[in-house]
Image: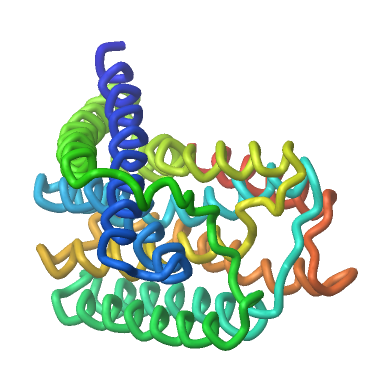
Length: 315
């Protein structure tokens, strides 16, 4: 019971730390006169990937490579199956042109790259981490250029102009609080998850692809559901796909630059990564059939039921 409490406390600290980090980053970006669009596409995306990044780095450094890899694979599966599924059930989701031309193809490239890197030699190396991070930077450059040309090209999360008036003292206080919460949250979560896995007689990979992944997807789920209920253009497909691309490019990229990540559980390559590839691939036909530019309610039900089936298989 104590270990479950550690996991829950770790998740709460990660969510709170991520929120403080996003606010501080946006405030600092305004001070540096960075445009709202670029803040939305880069700063917010990096900050919202911070919880996953800290969990993966912490796990890799503490001899839990399965948590480091499956945290990202599970989070990417949860973002599509759980978050997108539930959001589409609440209300149909609009899909814009950039999805077909840029974000979906890039997501598939990143997903296949990570599969190849892991399958190739059962380890994510420093060089592969540099390639992933380099591809992410290239993607951001292309995204920002296309967003400048076409104002409707991307869904930028509502960035509050009030952030421009925040004092430096507040920004650095938030950075310190966010950083500390992320650090301790990742410590509690990784330690707690290891013990839970031991007590339940399941592998660390199973705990991270389910429990930890769902926990780190809670902020996306909450934001998407609230937006869907308010009938706002939900934190749509663009943002969820962006989150998945960032998870692979920045989280696994940076973690493997800090320390190489070996594949220690066969299920990562025999099952989990194929589910991630499948969920990523199926988005294209779902957004095309029966009508272009939309994901319907029944498609949301299909995604959600597929996710439940995946969790059942894992356990």
